[in-house]
Image 1: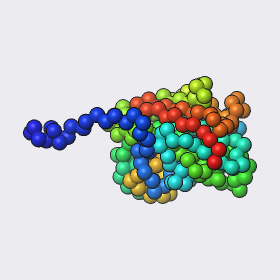
Image 2 (image 1 turned 45 degrees about the vertical axis):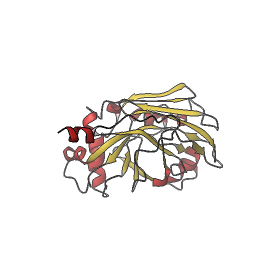
Image 3 (image 1 turned 90 degrees about the horizontal axis):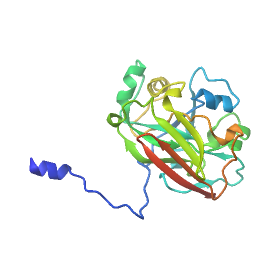
Image 4 (image 1 turned 180 degrees about the vertical axis):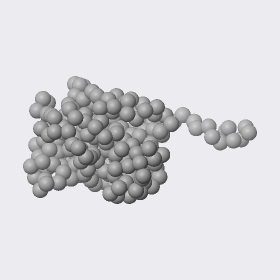
Length: 238
């Protein structure tokens, strides 16, 4: 018994001065849900959706929670978006109900769905991925937290700051479509595999609202979700 206890004990590590990487290296797919908070839909100039708005983000956008974020060349409207990220742990395919969905979750993660609004909306050709798939546009972490550590994924506070000034402050209970519904819904259209990432939408308080300036080189974004840790990412030009 002593050998087992010794084998399962994890020593504390001093990570001072070391880079913290993303808790998942390269998801097979990054699926995102747009306008999943009514107040954010309103600040975007849209009514709340009646069915989930889904778009894809390039998997190679994923970086660590403190890595630099690059403002793309030609960008004039780079924006922040704190989101609850969901990492799939077991294949989800044609689930029969939302009640089955959370059993397919490996864990939850703090995610920043960085966006370039001019690319997303004005140069899009009708799709959002141009404004979402720029390099470094998916900071994740610092931790992947297993479902047993989260009492209720629909009651987490999520916040963001730019240069220390508050931007977003909401709770996941204000989602239009909750996590279980989103996983069930998406499983009717695509197969979700272990390691895939689902961004579940952002609350109000982004630059797209017109209330705040867009990001510039030298700015610092911070985002935080209850129980999932805090990110701090500086911006520079690509």
